[in-house]
Image (cartoon, rainbow, N blue to C red; front, side, top):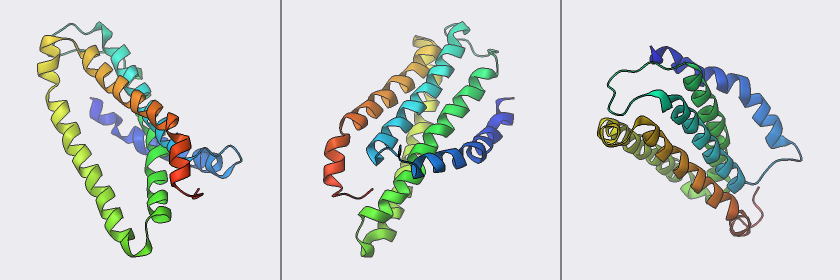
Length: 169
């Protein structure tokens, strides 16, 4: 079952976190907005693997079998995206927020994550309705194009965001 592969996220974090840490410490360290954008693009790539893997599933199918490689690739790219987003966001909260408001902003960050998880659950619950009208590939392509688009916007806004951060790196 697919639930057996939930451990892949933890495994990929353990494998790739040291590499990302070294990357962030090197002279090739991108800015925060670029890291966010890269994380969103990697998320989209993960969903594109699921979209590609679901191409053989017929519209409205209730049960289907596909290769596990698509799920492994999705977990890989989602984890790489997470490594670009989560630690960077927490770091910038601690750097950019005034000292008296840090605890509150960390709380808001985690509330935003909770709201995002609720929305993700609601969207995932619509898979049957979407696959009845379209197919599963379309469902996953929605989650490919939206994060990639937002990631590219974040990368394009990088000069403005760097200016607004007043030299905080």
